[in-house]
Length: 225
Length: 72
Image (cartoon, one colour):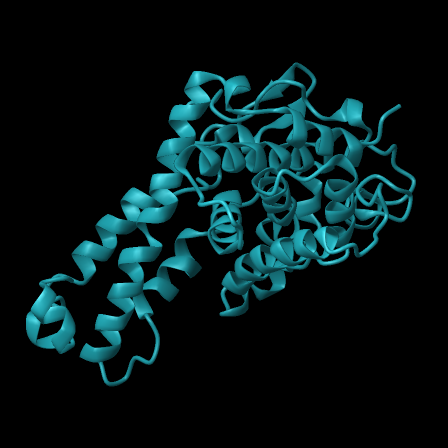
């Protein structure tokens, strides 16, 4: 899956209103299932989707978030399929905007749209129950070029778990089919998660800035930085 | 043949944490921790940078990091 699923799934889960508190186990379950859904869709549509110019974090991870929210809300089959159908009409994100402020907006828009799609489906809004694989659906519009054999039947998605079977974090999200089964490109072109290096750089770059005199009075009193 | 949308909907409904391989659980926990680690401190850093730099109206470091380290 050429995308950053966590950046979309987690904000959507955190923002989702629900009468049940978001327990750790529920968060973990919804997150994993969301990643799996996104991974399966990403593998089915192939990396060609990315090469056409789409930004997978906007166009693919939205479905990962829909899957996570579907688990969070314990949606039934019909409502979940409807949510996918609504989300299929909400996907967006073009690589042309890489390097601009609009690129990270793709991430937020995907999370927002996923949450909206699920809430609309729960509210009774209708959508195609086969929005992903239908002839005029998501895969047909955003996948391979017309005339190519469609790869988006249910048999095209792997039965095994994608998450956790790789070497680091989620390299399997970047796997592509080859003549010898599934393979993992090495080195991975992009790590979906760079928390530790990012936090380290933040710490280094801001050393000296985090002075008490720069903090607002309420933070000084609490000793929080 | 069952469609992809229906297959994924059933997958979401039927699978639970009990079905997830243990190694996947560990990696998911780390991923959640990592994904949660950056936004919280970076939001504070952006606020500090706005206060410390009169020419910066946004979190410059966060913006630069996004454009150079994130390609997907």
